[in-house]
Length: 150
Image (cartoon, rainbow, N blue to C red):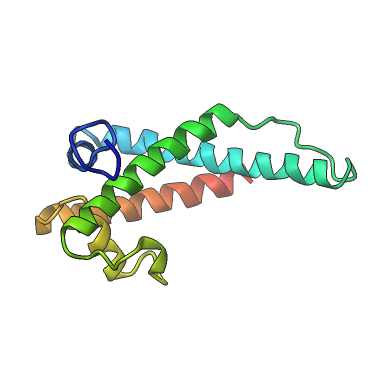
C-alpha cells in the first residue's frame, strides 16, 4: 500500500513498530548499525559527487579512488521514502494535512520533532523523550564518524 496506509512493509503501522523496537533496549544495537549505514550512505554520496565532478570536468578533476555503491544508495533511498510516506500519512491522518516536513525551517525544531513523532503515532511522552535522546546520540555518532572518514 502507498501513502503510509495499511499494514504493508512501508505502512505507518510497520514503521511505528520498527521505531518502537529501535527505541527499546533490545533495539539499540540496531540503531548503532543504522548509524553506521547512514555514514556509509553519506560517504557513498560524497564518492558519487566526486565521480560526477570528474565526468563534468572531462577528467581534469580526478575521480575518487574508491567507487560508490549505487545499489546501497538505492536501498537507503527506498527505506527513506518508505519512512517518509509513513510519517506524512500519519501527519495527514492526525489533522496536520497542511504540515510538510520540507516547510519546517529548522528540522530540529520542536514543531518538526512533534510532527515526525506524531506522524508515527508516538504519543507517549517517555517514548518521545527517548526518541529525541536517540536522535541526538545518532547525530553525534554520524558527526564523529564523518570527521573520521574525511
